Image (cartoon, rainbow, N blue to C red; front, top):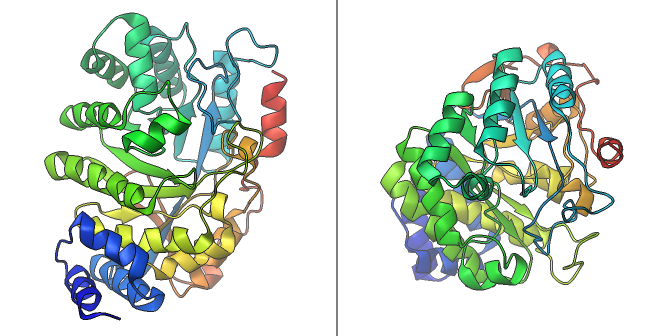
Length: 384
């Protein structure tokens, strides 16, 4: 290990800020074990109790009709396509009710950019969910949907955000980030807003008091430098707003879409990115790994690279699974993954407050009904 890399690792592990150039150096050249140790040192400093959190939620897709036609997406159908569908409000509420019965504290309502869905549609949707299930946090949609609904309704982004917040939106998902730098973004989503515009919507939301998460989809042909540039763009906004609660990278899934298997990030690239993200994001509290796209073994290993959250059991997920994600888990297994990595499992809410800490293994849940459930629900949705 060079002296330069050693100095950067020591500074980052000790709460010093590193530059994008230094982050790229670590990502490409730092030995794996010292990189992992430095990232884990940051986690231990931030969370000395050794707790790793999980969430119980449900992703409910209200429509697969979309005009944006992202090349990596296997979920969408063009308007008037024979396989296009939209769920009515009673069906969405039924799924919310099922989620509540299984202990969910959050729902993520997401869908395509339907040409007829303006702000008023989302006002009705969020208001109905919040009225029927006030205990559910609505952590939903992303900047792309917000821009789309504002355009359909002919209002500004700020007006759209104020209206859907008043209707019940609690938090914004990091959906639609994919890759924020211009070249890879245009290559995979030429009809989507720019990365800068995506971040501008987030900044408006943060200013209005609506926090969010930030995400990244890696493995569609972007360079290492572009991956780090994605992190830099997020950190610049976070420096101004402090509104990103967590960073959540995941890997491109290659089935049933126009990109197919042309490129894909390896597990090692993913783990190195997690470690560098923990060192680079000195102002983002939480780091979540994606067992859904990388597998449970990689998800468990990530807990030794700075990760403090394993995300959700995901009672339903249709978008990523339609592109090939087949990894599933149940609540007991997710808790075992955390505990066997020598961490203490804890159920959290959207704001990362601990709802239940499983300090004693004898206390661990054994309800196998709380299970991630993908393909059969996706097929049912496609026939709706």
